[in-house]
Image (tube, rainbow, N blue to C red; front, side, top):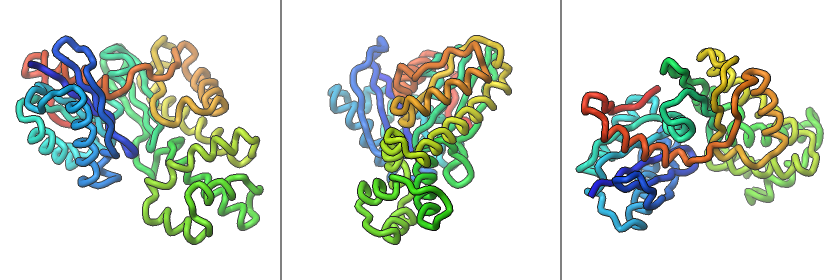
Length: 316
């Protein structure tokens, strides 16, 4: 029996989709983070294993029945990450062709298949990736939390804590976030919050994102400003890809993917207006198909392709 497995792995969670030989979705699995560049290899491999086991167990499938695997992973632009993930997946699925690529590659697959289009990703991190009619691909963002990831849940959470700190020093207006953040994270003092952030920023900052939404809904000016800044930052990332691909005047799908989207009308209406000013003919939408399913379909297509066309390794 032939089955295909696809992974979509990021800094917060890993999703897995299992298809049968006809392309029918059999099961899904969910695991922890699999961005090795941020979570480390031990956690990343555990996230992949957890997600795969969930899907295989739900479908009653053995790993040896999987004929092709495509893993779209945040951080897979780094050769060292690709190599380590390839080794694990080849051992875990000994009968499978294995392909490791980036999370934005499988998101674009889920959005438009092999057609032209752009995907804007905002989850723990942020990036944009696109393809034009000639097949040229371009990416922007995805540089990690210390030098990039503008508009991501991590960035929004970091800006929220900075707003609280500046309000404490009398540099910025008082914000509801000063009460919401310590209460939600069970950090009664500023010192305990600072220590927790220093120890595990990837676990803390994305968790603050819903609190910013709550404060913005209550008309908290600093929270609203943070969301509007996020919209502007995300529009710049997508705009860079659109312009470099020559798509500004073209009609194409621009799909939004990731946990930042689908929660704030203010953020998305501001973002959509900015995107429309860059690409008036773009069809802006939320990604309707999970990237893990796009990864599984990519695995199926690569398995069916002539052997010379199957590429092992990530894009960067």
